[in-house]
Image 1 (cartoon, rainbow, N blue to C red):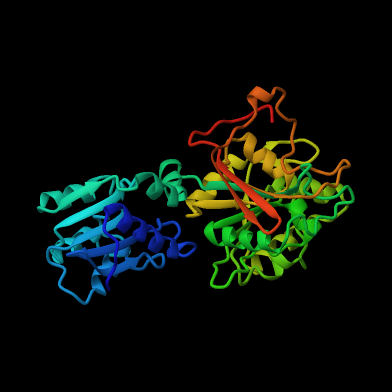
Image 2 (image 1 turned 90 degrees about the horizontal axis):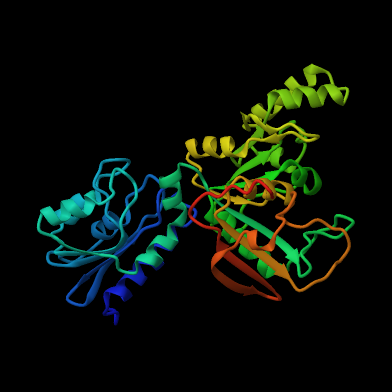
Length: 393
């Protein structure tokens, strides 16, 4: 396969494009692409195609039809050096007599973390690191956060009008943004392992929270429902046998709610049994605050989701859940879709809560990107790598 690419940066960009093809299919593994070059010619490419399948380097080298002795290999993440679901990539790199390896960034997995590079060098392979390192880290921001924190990387997504409303005063919200923006949201649902919403959103909109892009992967649906108010006939419950679904609730809060609303204790048990027969996982989560509406301990919940291998969450929760997650320092990225519309009135905003009192203390985004989708546009940015709790929000 001929190519006019010449610089290491060009080959690494090719590896990054390949890596992106694994989006939505490899979680909680990272997205990795590999390019093999010999005498200025690309002789093999590969990427990590599915969780549990071969890694990018092994895919590329196994499918190579040419002699790889003396070739160069480009990969956006350090080759693994341990046995897991597949053999180590360092092993096949040595077997195929690759002479030089260009690595975008080091792997933060403790099982690798520089050991892969060290093994290659010990066996006489020249290794060059840091090629397009920033871009290589960015494509796997979910993976790096999950490795470091053991908590899901969380992206808060919402759509609002130009005057900051997520619905009209009547509650009507279909649709804030146009077709192109909504189609891009499906790409985000494919990107993240989980999607989270509050019970208020579920009761009001009866959403599916699935991925509707061609070839996409449905995220794990996570519903925050402290009092177990989810309706048996709603679309999330009825499709739970096909789409993995988790309901986070609290037994005592639910028991009190059923009692206060005049429902027999047997009804709560019937609801639990019915949901479980549908395949829904019920996570009993402690209460963080016990006000008029008991609030789940989101930090505890996120830790439990991390233990289940959910490395990333798209938060489509509504203003209350968004505000709670932001206050707890659980949000790392924001996707704000803005429509050129004005609705005025006392409609809800995308992030509720007490609110910050001084503008100087506002939550600031960095690494801002702006993209247009039809008449709408999306502003996305990082909140930061460190967890910052915001008790006043």
